[in-house]
Image 1 (cartoon, rainbow, N blue to C red):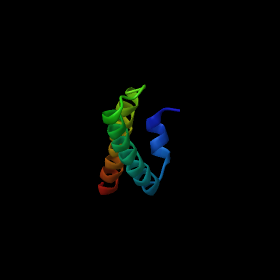
Image 2: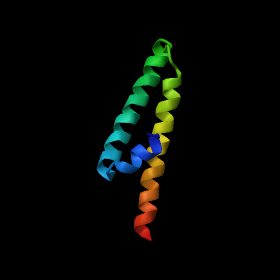
Image 3: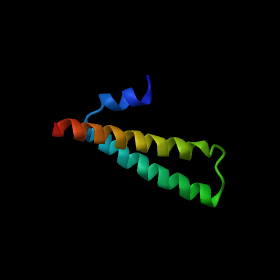
Length: 67
């Protein structure tokens, strides 16, 4: 299943909780990467993209509710 479809199935509350967890995780990855380089620095990129996907889905729902 694609990530975008995964996010569409989640409720607003679940999306916000996942967003908070991903932001915290991204900050932790950045700190860890600064101290000692990560073996897989692509994980930072993936976290950033997941955060953007969640923001996109939340915004789409917000616009849908306005109409």
